[in-house]
Image (cartoon, rainbow, N blue to C red):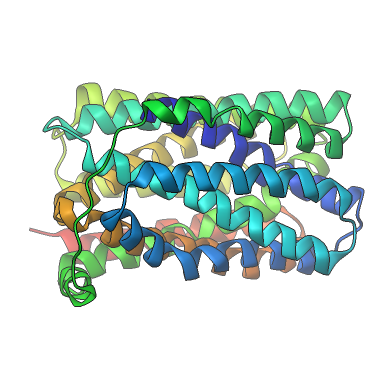
Length: 369
């Protein structure tokens, strides 16, 4: 059931994260700085909550946290359409981000605690469902946003989230083990873990660029409708999912860690930069290449977490890695939201892609044998 639920989570997240800037700018007249702040605060609440949620999931059944996250997510989605002023919207959006973080993090922890020896294949299957959900969310939201208004779409999504409560009965039970907090620090502050967290932080800066600028770039620069944006994004998500599945099924262990990470960064960075050239076919082709790189990074993240940490403390420790990625998205949102509004929505994508390429020397320094 875990692949099904991560797919459902991805439908929700891709429906909101990538299309919401269109609604905020075109219907609510929020500025680029306000949109950047919204997504920055969305990341900030995850920064504050990740570690406490991870430790809680180590000590208590994680599927109870999943249910709590679902109820809170549905409530926030139902309230959001009735809010049009920035500060009240920010408050409800903060609650939405926190509840969605609780939902996703509990699923990841259940995965790590319930995974057999064949890590790559299981993680590939899980992430293929995750990207399949992203693809479905982009397609469905693009169609609904094109035919219905955004507020009604949010309320329909809220009802769909509530319907997920019943299948949680089939989620695995995780046993709770109480671990002293200092042990998590002892696990985390080692050279391999700190290197992993550092490059992941820098890499995920481009996620902040994507959530604040990608949909607006596709609308303003490539002149796509919401439906066209949905198809564009769905194509990339399909490639990310296929890449993760194929790696877990066929490619695991065939490359050295340095070669693997270098290839992933190269594909992701170059694709992110060259997709900003206007012709649609050119842009989409390079977005697909970017998706291949992101799919490889996704697999590297999951397999590295499983390899570095003991299963009894993997909830808290994986949440610290999640914290690093959230900090990257948070920082990227604050930087690239205003930058895109002032200088054009292509520049956040170009600059964040260049940062990914600049990580190649860091990969060599950290992983050379």
